[in-house]
Image (cartoon, rainbow, N blue to C red):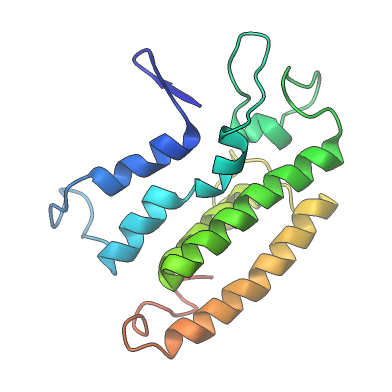
Length: 177
């Protein structure tokens, strides 16, 4: 749940906001992403796997749900209230959210699915090695298995997309390492 100016919003709701932003062409800082519709869908649905938890969430002592990092990748010490006590169970639950979300988005648009896959795996691997502020979960057995499985899917998606007239120019190893 995200709190913005007193408004409580689910992760699924805040993830949908980019999908409502009007297409404005080039921004002041970045060129419009290509393929645009795939980027909008990925931005809108990147947390859609959390929906299964959102509809039957657990709350902490203050009445708020734990954040997505705190759900599994907490820094140690006391487990926040409302979070599954068993670390392995937390890991399996977190991984299932992202696996389900990736698979759902992939069914809608394979390139958007690839982007969401890279988001989910980046959260476990310090942004694929470029975000040292994120937890490095690569040595955790559940994360390691998830990352291996998703790497195989990434390779499969790149091969599929590279054969597609619509996505060929975007689906290169250089863009999606």
